[in-house]
Length: 199
Image 1 (cartoon, rainbow, N blue to C red):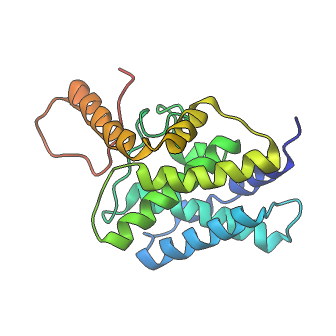
Image 2: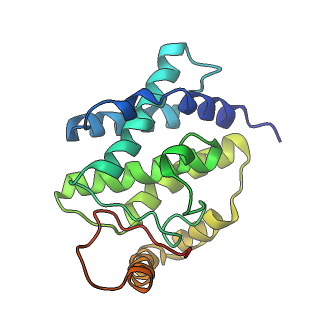
């Protein structure tokens, strides 16, 4: 099934590497990038339909969000298999964010997680806010592009039956348990909670 929106968005993300070479991203820049990404994604802006500045802006917003979520001490994100089951957790998030529908949904997840933490002023690896943002975009993509990702459909089912929030809390615990079993309990806690499900 042709997916012009996703292909165009992935192409736009692929061309946006310069932000990773620049200095640290500020909180204000991250919030602006989240707003730009969500506005463009919700409106269905694509590289093929939008003028070049719009597709460049979307790509830059996506890269800014990924960079901020990975490098800022203001936020902590869970990129473990329990929290991002639609991705291979052994893959570099900066590369995934530029690849197809799963990458676009990763950026939406990071947007929701980062915004919730910046608004509350507290680090919280709970994936619930990220999932809600990701599911909003997933529903739009499913309608526009006809995509269906089984791992995300499982989250949709939990959202429908009202167990998504409690499942998010258990996802964080599964990620912590996985980290402890791989790395032990000693030493400083990592800035990010990244499940190490692979040896």
